Length: 309
Image (cartoon, rainbow, N blue to C red; front, side, top):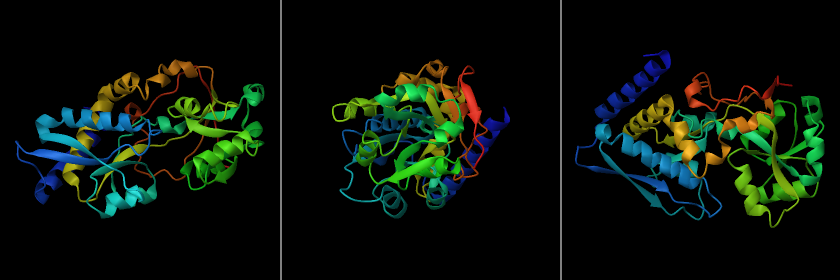
C-alpha cells in the first residue's frame, strides 16, 4: 500500500468511525435518498456528467454502505446553492469549485470530479485574430492582451496574479459581447466547456471560436460538498471517488461519457503552448501531489511556468 492509498484510507476510516458514533449509519435494507438539484437550464450540459458519476459512486459502494437512490429536486427560482446546502435540508450535496470560503462552510470530498480539467483553459477568440494567436510564444506577448472574465470568478484572480490584464465582467453573455466587439481579446474557457459553448452560441457569434493552441493551466478542483455534519455521506463519497481515481476508472469514465470524452486523447494537445499559472487561492489541503487525481499533460506539449508578478 503506497502513501497516497494509506492517507485516503485513513481519512475514510476516520469519517466512517465518526459517522457511526453519530448514529447516522443505515440498516442494511434501508434506502438512502440522496437529494440533489436537477438541471438548472438546458445549457447546463455538464449536469448529466455529475449525476452519472454520483450514481456510479453510489452503486460501487452499495455493498458497504447500503442502497441509495438519487432524487433530483427542482432548482429554486432564486437562491445561493452554497447557502442552500450549508443552512437548509433542501439538498444533501452539491458541486463547487473549491476555495477557502466554501471549505470553511462545508465538508469537501477532495477528489477532483473532472480530474482538474476545469483548470485547463483554452481561449475563445475572434476568428480574425487566429493568425496572431498562433504566432504568440511568450508571456510578455500575452500580457499585452486583455482577457474577459467573470467579475467574481476565481479565474480572474488567478490571471491577475500572473500579471495578465483582465476585464472583469458581470454575466457570461456580456463577456461574449465584449469579445465580439473587441473590448477584450480572449475569454478563457475550460477544455470541457469551450467546444460545446461554441456550438450553442455560433448562431449569435459566428465570429468566435475556441482555440487550444494556447492553454492557461492552473490547479483547480471541482468537488462534491456536503454539510459539515453529514459524515456518513462524506465517508461514502470519499470511499467511492478515491477508489475510482486511484484505480484509473475515473478517467476511463471521463473518456466514455458524452460530456467529457471529446478532450481525449490528451495527445490532441501535443502542439499546445501551455502557460502553467499559480493558483493563489487554492486551499492548502488540495491533493495536488496525488497524480492519480489529475489529468496529465502530454510530454510533447511546450510548457512555460509562470512566476507570480
